[in-house]
Picture 1 (cartoon, rainbow, N blue to C red):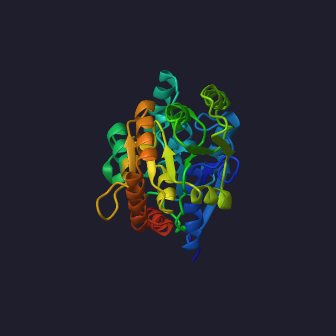
Picture 2: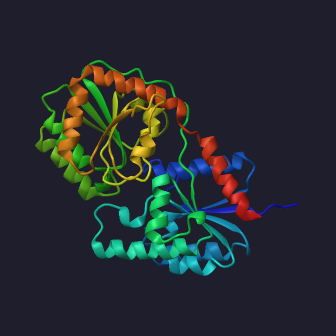
Picture 3: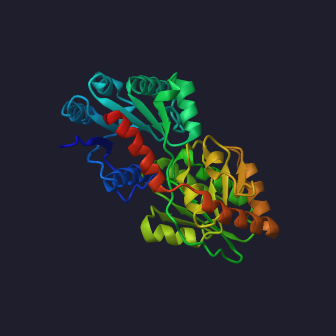
Length: 359
């Protein structure tokens, strides 16, 4: 008997190595994992300025949905689906729509209030029409339920997994800091540069690994801050890293720094912990849950308030000057790696949800 495939609709850049993102990695790993489990998958990657696409992209999404057989299960990345309820919702009665939300649309930093409200309303309409919603963290699931008035039974948590990785050996002074994130306002590189300037009297170097193309004006601003503070010879701009170069960056790091203003999960946190690298991050949204605790109940890193460059600088100074703290956090990170969930677990959770809908 032929089994109908799960249709998966993804952003057009899902496999573009020049713009790696946690959302794209998640989408690719889940799709590949489903295929490995024997689930038939039919992928469609749609180019467009999502979540506010042009006429051609909207028409293409409508065509893709219209061509799905009645009763088909369709998994849509929220970046594609949530901004266009007028395209998606008309198919909700005949298709089993599952919307995967990586980041609520209105949570993107720097949006004008009117645009944020427009995107928020569109997302609410899309999610209320869907058969099921997938969130990537418990925090995100709770927020979607409360903010959009969704039935808790329709919102499912499928967190990202991690791959086993060798322990990072760490270095002697100067300490090597690593920030893996797209250079956008939400990721807070500007805050990190100000914090680094405040500890310029101490020995360290910092690598910025992530795409620069999504917000050129912000990239220029951050580069200007680096030069203004005289940090040009201590901050290294690596650009987008994947595969072996990204693994090498983690292996060389002593501390991962994630200064985000908003973050539903923070996959780079678990990628660092998988290598026993402690984390300094903002205590925003889902990040505290992602960082978690080791089997002794110790947090394997430091958390500071979001948007507070002074608190970030204070935490950096503590870490840079307190050898006992560095040793304790490294030991905690190495213990925490044993309790991280795997991509196999993530894929099985997704497959179980989709199988229920396909019946």
